[in-house]
Image (cartoon, rainbow, N blue to C red):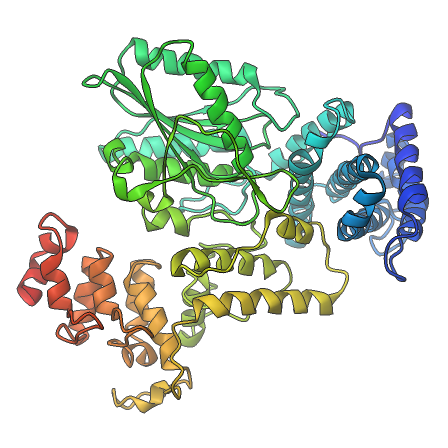
Length: 632
């Protein structure tokens, strides 16, 4: 456990002064008039000296009961000084990134060293802020502490992905090791009681958290008669580099050898920590096929793609000399333009993968070519050597794998509970639509601007738009920012919103919009909403993009009942047809009970009855006797 703020050793202090002086001498004249690097570094030198180099005993004495307590609002309090230092360092990082091209033209090597050191310094300052918040039970203080801890994890991840590959492996090695241990010690007391839901707000899970989640899932699966086996593989004190820890990999190799030697036909899942406890996690399933006498392996990357490439390369280099006969399938599941560690997503995908057969994932319709892997610090993707791997698309895992794609807690919380004070039906409707991404809302501001990056990318995938998604570096640049300029934040959020709406709302018809009150469905007070938008909500909800209870609630609202037979802009499907095509028998029955038309035809001349007739005999829809009586 961390008992005092981190202070630098005398050698590290010399490094600190060296890098700050280097920034000023090389790049001091860059930056805008209001945010020149020289001035920012001067401010950081004057303030960070008080928080970085003050002895821990002195800080403890300042905060002890024997001395007068200093207010958080006091500009000389340790907490306020630490927060100020962290903010200045974050601003320098932002300016550095904004002028990276000019800096790299001057001296690329110095730029990487300075930017890398700034990220480590930012992590150190943020960790000190988190420590100084203490173990308060106040909700606001606890929330701020969690925010700084997650920011520190972001900065460390950006450093390892984007800058460490261009630096020596020994670059600030002791400081990096101290920071990772500090992050783990700060995070451990914040581990909550594991929620009984399908989502988890924190993408950075410690092995102890991941083991607890996996153990609970295994127990629940056993109780319902569907045994599920998952093993978390990690090693204490793994390397701090952005590469595979070979000592940890030996543990995985032993498990795979055991499966082959004992000819274990029951599928086993492994959650493999690539390096340290806050690093990327790879999902691997394995079983032995007694008919083909091959080891069947499936790898799904839920986080960083470069990490997946080296994981697969190491796996194949390990299996080939052992003369194992094997088949290897792989998938890139992370739909986010940013690449976080996504430990929870890997855990969630392990449950989804358990319900899919190896043969299904090998089907021709899911096959894709080897993807291009994003380079660590370039905006363009990079071609790697071809691997002896069959790649499949994420659609083979079903819609749930897409819906559960990871986001940071500040971006989007998929399963946020409805407030007990939200009794009004209109508020509930808005909450459901926002919660399950049924339409774009106006409430995602500030940190929530990242939601639009995610939604834009997801809309591009689903709607087949040709425009490019946001690059990793664009997202990382935004992750380095803090909220100094509310107007700038609002403009950025608006830009993200427009990008998303340009794709996800393209179903709107160019004709004059009709409002819900135009439809004679009874004497209900109607809100002036555009029917096309309400129709989109109904189609997505009917297709299964929200829980059943949310869908039932929408069927009680007049504005949604008014568009129960509404087509999309291309006249491809109604809500009822969407429910049938996505295998939602209960929702289809509910729509029929509310007088949805089974005979109205789409652009292809097919009605709901025709779609029903074309479905396979063993589908969930065809097996439902009530639907058979209504549609056969």
